[in-house]
Image (cartoon, rainbow, N blue to C red; front, side):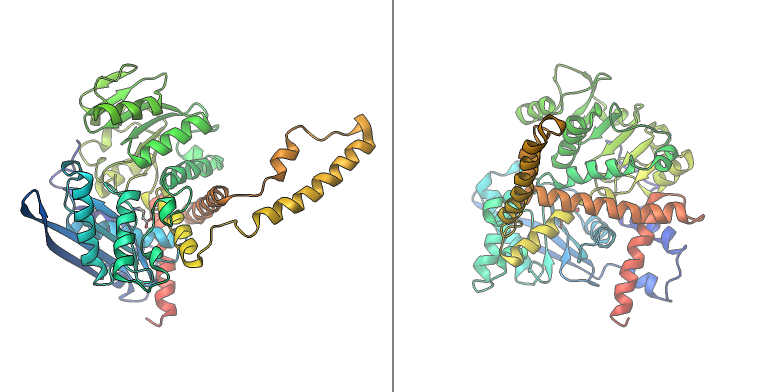
Length: 478
Ligand code: GLU
């Protein structure tokens, strides 16, 4: 589907071009621009696993882009397209993303060339553990140096295997669980991590819609209610973003694009029904309540208010950028718009909420999980009941007044129940994520609107992030 054209830069070059646009507007000390741009190191490993009676060789990578803060952070992806260029581009984006949303990490990314659909669970466990072993013994997985997380093709299951592998190899490390995030709850994970990136997309859009000036720049007004949304990729990120935007904000999901084609329905698609169909049938083909188009990429070009590319990099490129009609693009995937396409869209006036901000919900909640693992206690465990007891005092007092005042003053019916509940871990995670997304957006928009030489959110995001990375280099005396 819509592969970048041959005359387009690679993914890593595309990230560098966007970086260069931003640093040209900054005043960095000589040489620092180059130091921040380059990827510090990329480790390549080839290892064998005996499967089905023969040894199969796999190739994996872990790129460390910047160690201005440690540990470095970033997911591990399992996909056939993984290569050094891709992990380096993704590691660089992690550096900028972490700086933008103020998670105290450097940037890293890993990947393994494997198609997980070709192996059963036991085989995947052997492959994952062996890859983890190779990275752990070189401290490329380590709670204080390098902390992976899920990415494309990986999830809670793989993270649990990695955590267990690390614990087996480091039996006395009391912080072993913090070696990886995105673990299942029963293996040291945190509530709300699975949905976190999709939730972050929702919070990012809500924040965007709080600013009339920003909506006007995209030719939009009002709220998210009734806005027509097209989502590319109904994986973990796309599914949660679409579901929350529909269920909680009243957006209409008019298009869903998948590997085997796309569904389109002006009246709106049922996200859960489509997801169930994909799980059962392996794709969207045959789904009854929509028009099906075998050429999924064409649906990217349908008119809509908000386009959410939530799958691969480079899907909006020189071949289709001219035809994109969406007013607002929010990059839930990493690098879905190439540098060339970005330029075309900017000229057309399309507003793009950039990946380093839009999909930062995942790493933000990963940060909360890492802190939880290091503090060895669930968020809210100490204060929840105390909070409830103090709320009870207020409720008692109000009830006393209520009685004394008769009909002149009444407590609203659900107040007591809503006010009494202390926050549990999930509520605290959501609150922390919402706060993070709001503050990071505001820091970008200050640069976007505050400087005449900055005309887009991506450049603004890079400027905020690079400035923070530069400051921490300076603090180190570099
Ligand atoms: N893979 C996700 C990303 O690209 C999450 C990274 C993390 O949680 O460390 O942001």
